Image (tube, rainbow, N blue to C red; front, side):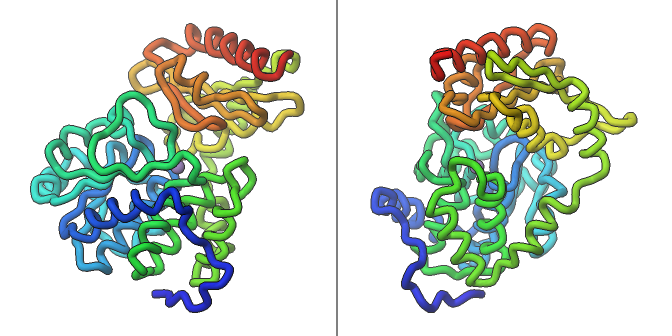
Length: 347
Ligand SMILES: [Mn+2]
């Protein structure tokens, strides 16, 4: 565990958050049997924050359990310091853990539909929400520590551990670092704020190994992911004048189902083209609907755009799920995106 020595020049929690930090901290520190959950298809921020917070709470004497609406991603299992923390949502063990829980901690989302089948499992349990998404209209109730100015939920978890004066187990340092690393796109998106870099600097000073983490997260892709990218790139369509480009991701590669984590980040490819303001990625969902990812480079608000299709997220990164097949959905989304680009950029 790190012992932060020299506090000069280190990150400090923004003043506007301090009250919410206190309130959330009071609930968290009193918990002995917390359940931690995050959104469907946990990403590096959701999974990283779960491990970070579970390790911290355990060091405070709690017995944390992680119960997610979808499987804990293989890619981030290296963060888990011990077996037994993650329980599959459909299992008896998860039901028992929820039955005994004295606190539910919802990380990296604050919306009911995003936690899927975990919602009924945590019904009636005191809840703390820690999130950095733009609030939608189906908020999960309870104690709320939310700030859309935070670069990642990892930044907010860092605020909590900082306010509690630690302890800082290695898994807490690593989990927060992975949250910030992945949500900022390795410190290149617009949310790569001074705070993102300050916290990263502090975490590295306290024992995070950035090269080791980077190679676990970005240097250990299954071959399947690159084959999937190759197939997706074959579908690339670019409307230069409209400022939009899109791809369609196949659901299977060589007869093997692509995992949500294989698809993570692929939307950056259409977005990386010169003149493209918004990149889109379409994928058929399990029930025949269409998953859409939106990524903006310029000033187009893709949170508003995703909301037109029942989704949401961040201003520059968002998603939606539409209960219609891709063939129906793609033309409508592309047209709405063109309109949004025109309205924003004055094209
Ligand atoms: Mn996040």
